[in-house]
Length: 193
Image (cartoon, rainbow, N blue to C red):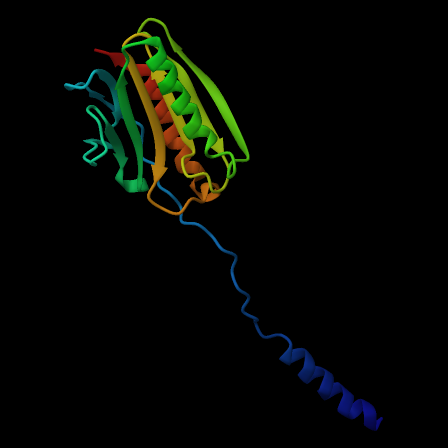
């Protein structure tokens, strides 16, 4: 009887003491990214190509020392991203083969960080636009989307998507997919001058 007299309050104290809330660390999370509604505007200037680009982006000429004429960046300030465009006039089939080889080299430099590279063919015969889009999958791929297009005679345009943040393409996936749609729209409306 004496044991039960002490056991009951002891058990009650133990149960009540065990009922307090324990703080546990929360798992890492990423910010919710608000994606704007899709709207496009024409880019029709003195450049040798025309296209539609997103209204939530701006086109700025490339002003680096190494830049060539008609190089530009499509800047997405709300995503801290840009699509770098480098244009080359084509004067021979050998030159075109060299430019295409360079484009493939830029893509293959991502192989150590890539888990997969998906290639999509671009064919728009009515505008003379032919090329490839490379979707580079992998958590630390520096440029998740690259492309090149040409008319096979006079024009060659290469593009690459870059973010101004450390690559973590798992968390950037919604933005990458969003900008990928814009790139396909750009290529679908591209025309040469």
